[in-house]
Length: 79
Image 1 (cartoon, helix red, strand yellow):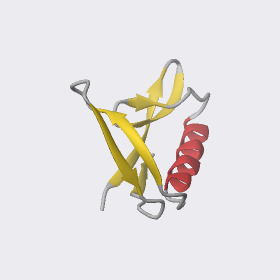
Image 2 (cartoon, rainbow, N blue to C red; image 1 turned 135 degrees about the horizontal axis):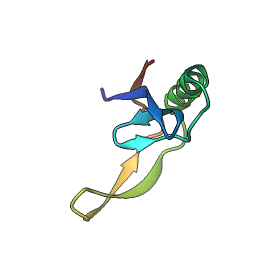
Image 3 (cartoon, rainbow, N blue to C red; image 1 turned 120 degrees about the horizontal axis):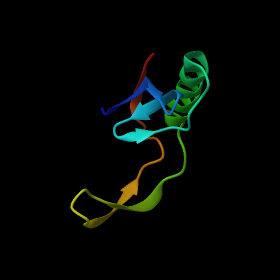
Image 4 (cartoon, helix red, strand yellow; image 1 turned 120 degrees about the vertical axis):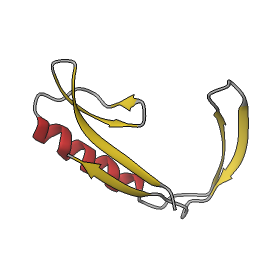
């Protein structure tokens, strides 16, 4: 199973959480960024509807697939 890791880092004069190469909004304190990361990580694990999605890979190619609503990743928060 996939694991999505949320890492709290200094960012733009405050703190943000990062998932891969993507940063959240900036928070004034480390504790606020960590709390937001824990909320986001928890929401990522919630089952939803099965839907058809399309996404672009790093080479600019588009792909289509069906995302199963119960197929959710494990998450970790690295404060």
